[in-house]
Length: 134
Image 1 (cartoon, rainbow, N blue to C red):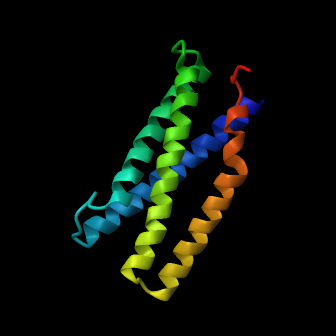
Image 2: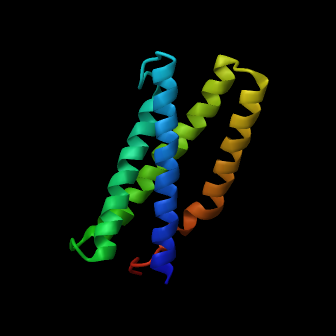
């Protein structure tokens, strides 16, 4: 049951991340802005790629297709979360450094702080996921 809830939550997270990445891509394209020009963008891309690998390994392990896939799923989760966290913090810094409008800064700061609190509250529990051997 816990594995099923984890799979559902991670699938939802992957859909949300994909939607966000699509919005970023379309925004850059519509503004004729170059892609992957900052540390924030590279860390975000790295985090998204490693997260996708972790998701694929988790699914392969859940379905029983690949022996050892769950181990890779667990090993890839922390680097993916770390890259995403650093990308998040760097986005907050770039908002301050670029002096964007007050509304944009407030929303970005609110989302960033909320995400940091969420990671701090739930991140340590990653070691207690199903399939984790003691």
